[in-house]
Length: 575
Image (cartoon, rainbow, N blue to C red):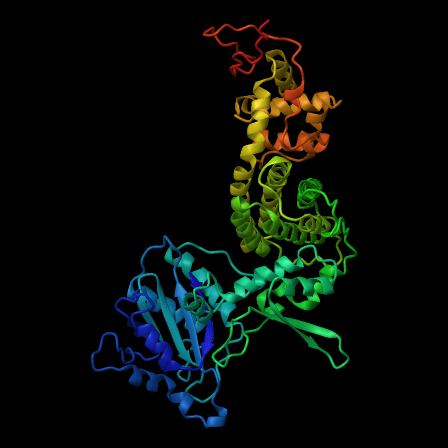
């Protein structure tokens, strides 16, 4: 059950919307379910004699009774309350109870207060009501509605439990401000995919990802096409900033500005300066360098740093963990800007979801996340990655690691009671899994083909390695479709001069595997990263086979120790 409080200046205009057909004729049977009167106020939805003008006058009477210079400019209090998808349908009587409890909890009209504000509750759909109140009491005073949004949320959590509805996650006042209904309506009218506030929030986060200085941050904002205006002190020092979308104007033709703090609590200039003050970042190659590395290299560099961040989330240093979450957020923003089109949409959604997981009451002012922020910077400076070849393989490797890190973030937030942040990290992990599945098809497919071409004796030897290093999971790994890719990787590890069993045991001990969706894939990427192998495989196919098996056409297939067919894997060449 979600309340969404806002204020306005026109009682009649809001009533006309509530009792009207809606923007797409979605309003059906609008009518009152509760009001400030013992009997219902005039109801234009059910009483043909009642009019919107009459209801407006009744609601506005305490406001109009004040001298003009004492009337509040925004005297209309509006709070839609909606049940969650899948909740049962509430009756009018139940919605009336909900309305009275929220009105009481927010201080608009406490129970038993005969001098309280006037209010109504209009229902025009099955899943929600609209509360409307005028913010002048019968005695001419203003209501005490301090933190009314928080109190409404808390009361909704109690109502959900008592009414048998879905109990949503409680807030902690670290969330970004949601777009108002007016902002959402404007986006629909103008054909924008989302309200300006949300577009600007994402753009500012992308400009901040891996930024080394305040000047670079502002330059990136302008390069992204945003209007930027700084608030300066008489000395000329910058005190704050605000941004606007080009062409987004109000009815007077002026740009609609949003300050950083209005976009999200951690996007205010003081909070941005705290993030940048951790120390200088590793610049890496310039975007203008002719010999800058392919995007694969910074992605490979980032993967162990993400592993380290995930390990931090299982330790006891909460400040350091909070700093690493911020760095992971910047890394996701960098990936979202530079990844192939085939997965960019999923990564944008992952980054947007995870930004909520980067904010909590655990602050990270004195912790160092320069390494992971530098990795984000390196990814941006290397430019867009291809979806194939080493770029694609390195992207899959990094995404595999990020999935495990976001799951670690879910556990970290859950253990500290950060329900909204845990839910956001869980949603980000879902999008990252989808992006990983898409990006890993090509590199893992190449490795699997390479593994299937290995001699049966080689495959048996690597199967023994897995059984000795991971006895509890060996059957699962050897039966997995990814076993072929793991066999190919172990073979490359061996030919690169490593002892496969020792290296495999090392990456198994590196971090738990319980949270992995696919243990085999995780082992493949950890081994390749540890042994510095190409992320696309291929080198095993260049190795000459020393043992061959002669198989006539139509003969029975040979089977290796894992039960997997190895038909004609190595035919003797014709003489």
